Length: 178
Length: 178
DNA sequence: GGCGATTATATCGCCGCGATACATCGATGG
DNA sequence: CCATCGATGTATCGCGGCGATATAATCGCC
Image 1 (spheres, chains in turn orange, purple, cyan, blue):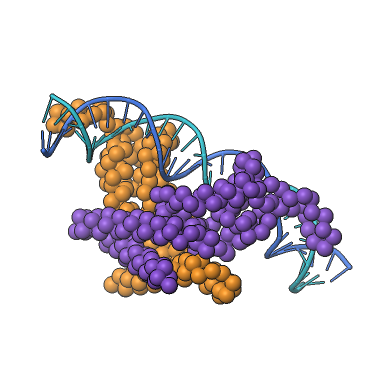
Image 2 (cartoon, rainbow over the protein chains, first blue to last red; image 1 turned 30 degrees about the vertical axis):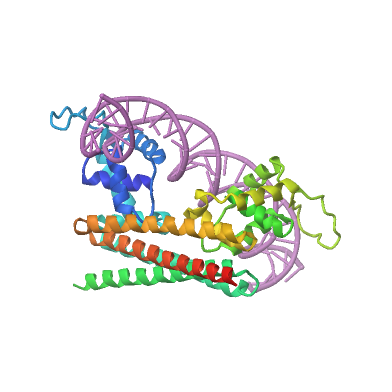
């Protein structure tokens, strides 16, 4: 899904690694914090796959003073690949790791796919909630205070997330009516 | 930290892999969901390190009918190692992944170490909160609705976690006074 | 004039996940 | 009555991502 994020960012403008990582941090902040140990290998992978290419040495007199930077830009295949990933939003799209990334690119996502992702995510979080509830009632009397507190907090924040998703979905629907 | 969890669980009773995994699920549920792909390699690692040993074939006439199970139990070195991990609670103890695990074993953790972990965790979450706040104000006007919503939700749940930690800490302190 | 922070690329080993394979037992039901 | 499904159980493989680390040049500040 790192792949998805990088392709999406490069859609905005050609960028070099360091910049991509910063933009990603601003974009995701709360959720995932991709490290350089993932960034550079992924960039090379994308390049080998022909989805991005290095731009020319870029001898722009203005921007000189910096050290050697590798600026990447999307190839047509890269754009196609990103569009594919957007359209084929499957079950792995709504797990904890990917959902935030996909949400961050919602403005570029078709409305019907947005809806599918939001509802898939909601279902997924609801399932977790049910699991937590069941576990909490089943084990409630036989576990120590700290573990119970851990579960209580987990359940509560899961419930909050469901409510949040409901709001997002409602908002989508009201926009659809316009 | 998987190591820590397994050693802690085996402190309760000797167990085989499948059972360890189920107990772990009940214990952590909300947070981490260790998979078999981690479980068995880790068990072997612990065994090689001499921290756990396989119990004898266990020909107990009663419990037969099941397939070959490998029941592990702690060695003295294993117990020592667990005590070490409990005592030397360092900075990596309070990151997202480890904190839940450590909290689940708080009943076996000395009061002063409990306090150190809780305060370390609070500091860590507070720092994240500050980062989110800064990012939210800095980028507020130039990002799309969805990303902003993502950050808002992230910030809010982080704030909730800080409040929760404050309650836990307050409770610790009031218990200390008794 | 020197020192730390920032900009920048890159690698390495490790950890843990998801998928998968395989085998056995109990229960459910056609 | 037996078939099939779900739970019990052990195990491996590849891969994606992280944290630590190396390297280096430039910028701003005192």
